Image (cartoon, rainbow, N blue to C red; front, top):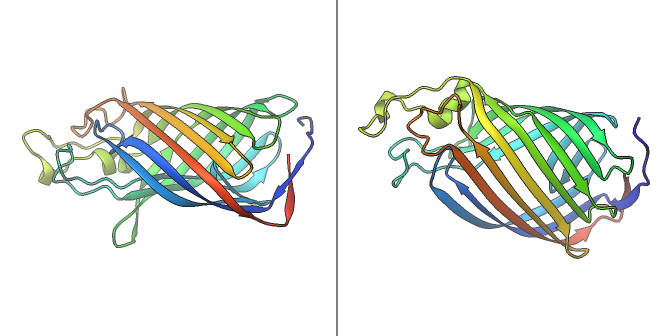
Length: 263
């Protein structure tokens, strides 16, 4: 067992509103970038089995100091196939949602728990959400990664993470993004069908800081390489590098009277 630390009392839930910005390509392999600026509602919830915060939504199915079994969630933005994109004239890519279990192993942690190294093993089922609201299964992904975390002595004052790991997916998932069916072949776009396997490697940096008691800032940067991937030869792959940058500024305006102990 890892040494215990003093717990801190924090509200069970907090409500806020934020504004976020993103700069990212149409999809992994596209060399066309877009900027997004949007307001959004924000909630923090600290439960025994469910936790919602700036890290996302986590369902704690099983948890000890060394091992966790959580629910893992990821999402992708829709992509239009108009204009001068390599996908011009092809069907649009709908919003994607990936959900599945994640086994997480604590490999190293200092006694004060302000620095740690975890191995996380998320397996997710991917689905697209069309304009008609219907879900369609688009395959499976597996993205193991090492995550180093450092945080302040004051709970939730600041936190930084560095994550590194490979990506894998099955044939259906790769084909949803990179397949070219015969009906969409052009002089500049050959027929192509992807296989399952390696999807690249990813490095992600995040930093979160409480500017004041109610004002919070988060930034992130993600860098991928698509060299030697199972879909590397797709005519829809214009570059073998991927970069995504983003920020979020959040103002918290309400909180519960109920307090919970957080280590």
